[in-house]
Length: 166
Image 1 (cartoon, helix red, strand yellow):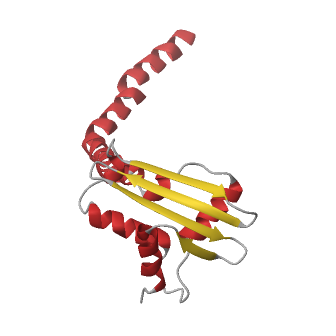
Image 2 (image 1 turned 180 degrees about the horizontal axis):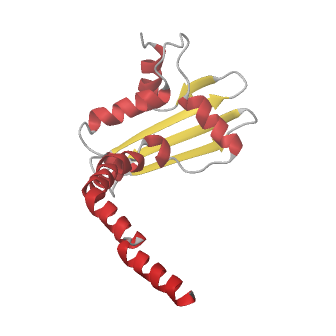
């Protein structure tokens, strides 16, 4: 009897397809769709995630310095019309390099430094350097009043854009 059960189980196994062959046929039928899905992710999603921008180019700062930079970059003028200092700088860079991925270029360098001038006064210097030239911005920020003053013509132009934006 034991031999009959073994024979029956062996005969039954021969008639049933194995799990490996089922999974192979499943993958063979759908492999082109899976490959197409992976290709779409690689072609469209990953480059967007890896795209460089101005904020990603900033160095890591101490929390106090980061707060000063956030105050400056978030400044939207006396009317709070919507254009911020960060947006104005991005627009200026986009004007200079309209159809380029400038942050991916090896010659592009963004430097940001924050220094404490007095107890509540800070100086923020942003230097954007690329193969075409450089843009230098220099501001003084009074954190107690939120007043921002420009120290050079380029930074003054940015503040004027923000202040008089409609």
